[in-house]
Image 1 (cartoon, helix red, strand yellow):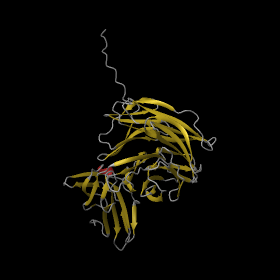
Image 2: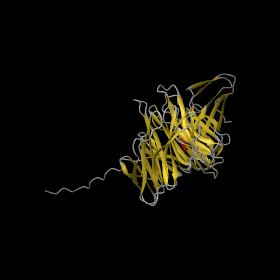
Image 3: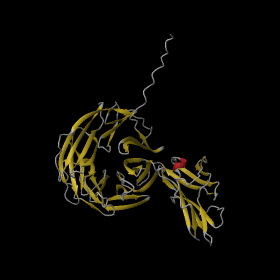
Length: 498
């Protein structure tokens, strides 16, 4: 209990986790509760001061203080009305995010104290102990979402810094909203589980954001609507499912009906299973029949409210084959459709759906890229899979092209932008480049040292960024400078004296 300067008002301060145990990058909230413990109604003004100090002390006794001056309710607080009338026994709470004030907090043991030094309700909290465990992020997935005039990025990853691993979700408003980023743990995951994210297309839509992953033989769907997060678990068919591949929404044109759709890959047999539903109710399709050569990679694209298209790869000898499958409800999947092939191994595959409103038809744009070898280029294969009422073959042979890379390149990551164009990120040997439409020679970029992973995301669906997350500095998305540095100014040439 904190000493209150106002009679009959009790002040309680606590962290949002009772055990005070946090993962690095996980948001830490300080919760201040004001309660009327008297016998008469009391009016409580805004908890706003001209000076609020945050004291952070580590295990060695080293302390740092961050002071913030607020003339109005700050965005990091969930503020009640300007003045609240509390009946006897009633309380009101304020939640303060520490990251926007103190910045990322490195792993270690700490104590936290809040000092409200001026304003209508000055007080000092006791020291609150907490710990931050080192993080080991893996398997990132991201999805952008337009929200009115703002734009949000949601990134989920598996953190192996604890046992069992945890799935974390970070929501970051990039334009317009002025809100600080926030990272929350969603739940436990299998050791090899790879999450996927699907975001709401807009604030006016009733579609929430979802994160999907595998845990304990279940497909777990986390539904985020505004600040509320609910979990739904669905028992999976027998198998060793690990990755939930890119999935998304389908809806009626008037937005009256929505459906989640996605495809999972059985890592043991190479079978595919699709799911379709709204989260609380999900149905699984009949599994594909394992072939002589197992499916090893998959990406999926929502076609319409009833169908899902999946582009998969099989390794047959020294060649990689690309196939198409279509899932519709609980029916047996249709396929495979031979899409193309490439000699050698594949580093990744991506697919996106293009819908034609005129006739209701559509097509899947797909791309695959090989693993970097000892050569100075990687091959990219790209094709279009036309879809009508059923499964049809491609309309033309896929295109294969070479992308130049620097010697020593260790990995390539790729992604399709909003216009279904492929971009590649190559890194290794102390250098990194981003390749895309009109940038065939690559745009050099600087990666942060010690990054746990780097991958491509797109701001507003078209502007490439390199996402990085490391155990010390935390999450970061660096825009790719497509314009380059300005040309040097011409040297001054002295004029001849006449």
